[in-house]
Length: 430
Image (cartoon, rainbow, N blue to C red):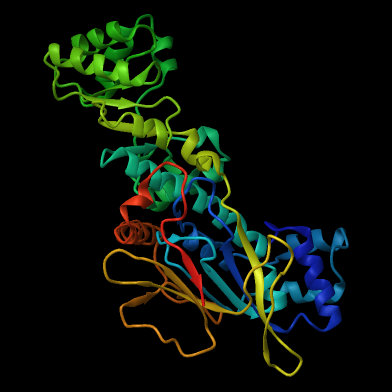
């Protein structure tokens, strides 16, 4: 399916006007970066990169797309003909998926002619702003959970396609499973789920519902115990399933108090191995508040798929360098108040050894006078229009998930505070 019209009207009109002025074929470099992190965040997480690469491969103007543009006279006939053969033929470099970013980090660099590179702006930002928002929030939740499993279960709180992307981003950041079956099929993410309150309510009693679930799913299932009375629900669950019941789920109440009471009750009934799963509008702060409670698994919905209050992370796509009529490269940048940025194509590095103290962002023009201990953050993803290292969606996700853990290990302990503060490390533009 073509992704060419997943864009803004003005991307097409800019190309049309630039072609008419003779500037559309100037070589150009665009960079994606955030001027700042969402309030209170110490780091951001790069996600969506390989999803974006797939979308760029499908950025084609077929007969239906061209007919729409012609019907509404959005571009000239000459540009319409050019769009009919559009294929991105430039170079895209970026931070690895799962990598961390900070204010000013050039997480993606797009190089090509102005007319072919500017067309990708909206698609790039729509993918990266959302996926990075989910991954950044999910990473904080994983740290707050302190090694206890988390299940992403926010499909009902997002657009149906965004829900799949959210499950992918959350898994990269360390979530263990998702409720979304399409995410399981496409990306190989483990899927989990049992029953909702409606299942209990459609039966004549809670006991009948529990017996039906056990008959269908076995005693290793998770029984939802708070449709009516939690204490009675626990008693009924163990009566029906026995002391080898897999887990109970709690979706309401004062969780620190309720969880402790349920744990004590389960233990008193001999169900000491039965786990406790909690849901109920959790976020990183409520998860942290349950650190001392006997919770075994967290289920997170709305908060993770909406970036926990930051559904977009403020990434922008800016032209930083272009050629003149003579072919000379010229640094360019927006200079308006509060929205300025350094011009010029950049490279970015962090120290390989132990905790990172700073991210170095350096002009790509001069020879780099850095020590060998510094690792480059930008790698080539697309070269001359071709994907450099093709991989399956499952492989991409697993690689990103592993890389995220490596990147986190470089941060100082202060990076994981949930209180408001400065970015974990400074970015220094040289």
